[in-house]
Length: 304
Image 1 (cartoon, rainbow, N blue to C red):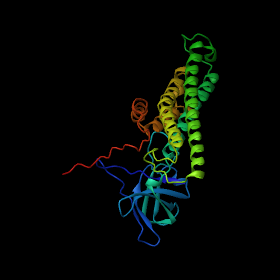
Image 2: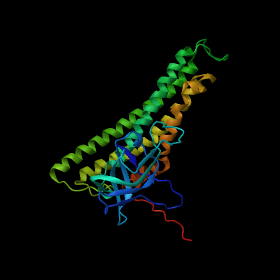
Image 3: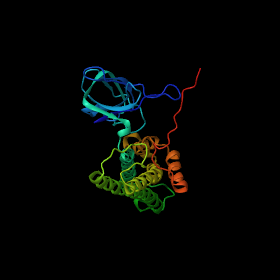
Image 4: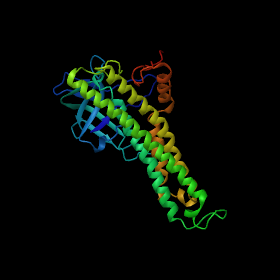
C-alpha cells in the first residue's frame, strides 16, 4: 500500500486539487501527487481527493491500473529508497466501495504515522552508533596529538562514541515510551468498541467513546510529540558527532556514513519541531487538546 496525499503548492493557501468523481462507472480520480511514499512499490495506492461537495475523501486505486503513472523522481537528500516521487492519476478507476470520508479517520491515526517516522529516527541514531564504533575499531592511524597509538584506545575517541551512544539510547527509550502510551490507548479503544461503538472523528480526542479513552489518547499524543523533539535532536546529534571519532577518510562517499545525517534531516523535516513543541507546551500550560488537527490554520489565497 502506497500513499498519494500531498501536492506541490504553487500559491499560498493552495488546497487539494485532486478530484474524485462518483458519477462515472466505476468511480474515478484525477490529479497529480507528490511525496507519494511507497507507491512505486505498492499494489494499491491510497489517494487523498476532493468529492463533488468539496469534502475530503480517501480512495484506493490499483497501482498498476489504467491512467496511473508513477515517477521515481524523489530528489530529497535522504530517504532515497522510499519512492516518494510523483504520481499522476488520469480518470483512474477507484476500487469498488473503497471510498472513505476524511472525518471518519481514527483519532489515533496521526500518532501511528509519527511513531513510524520516530522509529526510523531512532534507527538512524542506533546505526550511527554501531557504524561509528565499527569504524573506530577498523582505524589504525590516530592524530599526532592523540592520547593513544590506536584510535580505539584513545579516551577522546571513546568519549565521542559514548556521546553518540547516549543520544541513540535517548531516542530509543523515548520512542518506546510513546509506543507504550499508544498501546494503552489502543487497548482503551478496543474496550470501548465492545461496549459503545461510535465513529471517532480525527480532528479531536474529545468525542472518544469514554473519557478514559480520550485521556489515554491525549497522553499518547503528548508522549509522541515529546518523542519527536527528543529523537530529532538525538538522531541529528548522533549522525553528526560520530565524525568526531573518525579521521578525514570518514567523509569519503564510499563510507556511506553521511546517509545517517541525510536520512535524519529528511525525517525531521517532515515535522518542524517548533509546532510540536507548541502543542506540548499548550497542553501542559492550558490543557489544550494536543491533537494536531484540533486547531488548524486554514490559509487563504490572496485576493487579486
